[in-house]
Length: 303
Image 1 (cartoon, rainbow, N blue to C red):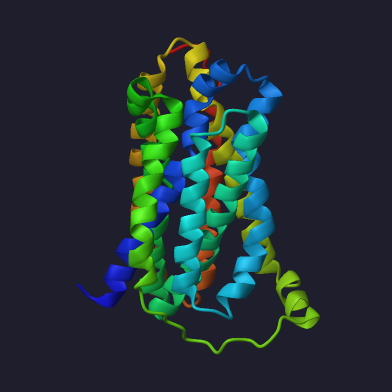
Image 2: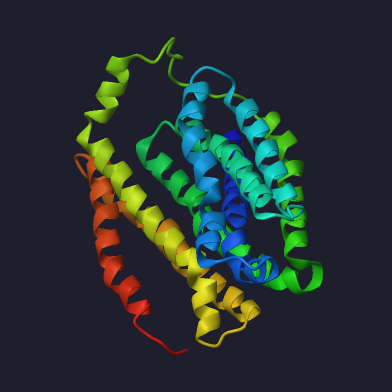
């Protein structure tokens, strides 16, 4: 196995754990809400608390990733993220629970911010990089699905607190492997971030539109994933059954969209004059095609 394949395999596995941990809270929300007597507003705070830590720390880790050893940063980020997840299971009041989710968001943002750039330096060819990203980002639906399946399968045996504790352990065990990964860097490290550098980024319309598209994608995905468990129970499904069905849907559609879609896009872009531009358009039209199907899924009020 080549060093590139090893790096991709480890980063993808960690990314799977990333989304598994992220969607444990939405999957367990009805149980946590009943146990802690949370209002709908408090449930919303709980589901989105990690975003506060993620949003604040992501730019910082982006800057640090340009200046320090990235594998070490990701390893320590994994430890912080694992500690946040672990102690989520020991939080007995809402304020403490929110704090542990913010800590989780800080640690996760370190990995999520640096890992794609590390892959980009590992794969220099645009087409090969897109294929690597297809595998890496397949972790989103797979990890999300495993979060629902793990939550639904384990909660009856070890309780919702135990689910957070047990699922944090693999992450802490993988941190030393990340620490042993070599640093790979194809560009020189910038000495400082100037206003002109920031202005170049903000004035890049393609980058801004790509970020905006990702924002709306996350808005829709997180909104659906956060309350699909509650919606399913309202129309008559048991928690374990919801985890199984939604998990299967996420894996099947996510694999088809992320892996197969990525491979198809790479194949079609190979003979294109501007492959990067084509890949962006392919992603945009795929999102447009998905909208009516997502809207239709919530028009039904029965099983």
